[in-house]
Image 1 (cartoon, rainbow over the protein chains, first blue to last red):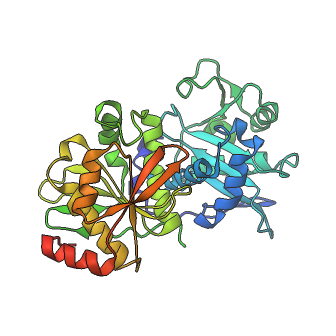
Image 2: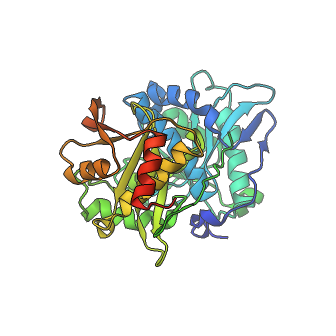
Image 3: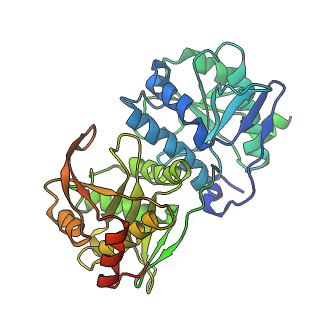
Length: 186
Length: 185
């Protein structure tokens, strides 16, 4: 199935799995997770993640939109936790809202979750699932040129800068292209 | 609460109220680019329209109620969104309506809003509900008044500014009114 086929997300009815890595558990977001997301959206950490919300009203609406992304597309950012912990560390995974030229793997870590390889470990799992279960033929990550930590994650994931790739509208981001399914398998 | 909201389908004499879906998207994009969107926050870029559609679905998941997509039963034509709306920042839950230009002037919003109100008072057990309306939106105010709602003060919204609060009749009075106007929900 091509990424274009995945746009018909309404037809996807198979239950969403839970992804496990060595240290992490990735689950589909649920309404009860609104508060940590709202806190994140109001924090300076959201600057590189689609922008900081001016108030709770905006942050709430954006979390609602994330839940709806899952319903429309059949995929989205996974909720990431360490095994045995209830604490939400961030959202990592598949992202394709209107205006994105290609399917994206995105990663957003909440306060205190950085510096331990969590984004890299979760993104690798989300990417493997997108290739194996969703049938993606490839993907990119859109990263702000000033977001050095995120660029480092992309490089650890084997991504290379693609200067010719189409960008989301007027966003001045860099486009990092992930290895293809075949390249990852070899 | 499940991540997948169970969105009920309501039927009225002429209309079906169903879950919002991506197939409604292009009609909304056209409306928010070219339609009469003075009182509903427009014009709005297609990327933001998509996120609003997604937020409608997320609202259902978070609240257990939300906005329906309204279709004409006879033709399947998409008319707009009507439903129960209570995002963060709203003073209380409201009955909201946003109709595409092609659906205005035929009592469609009235019929759908009455069905949404009956769902609120019946299935959800609410005892009151409002509609928030731009004070300059005369057509929407007339609709609220036809539904029996009366002006109950004003609020200032962070995004939309000063809004009139129209309070609907309570469950008993609204039920009697629906019977009198022949609304079937």
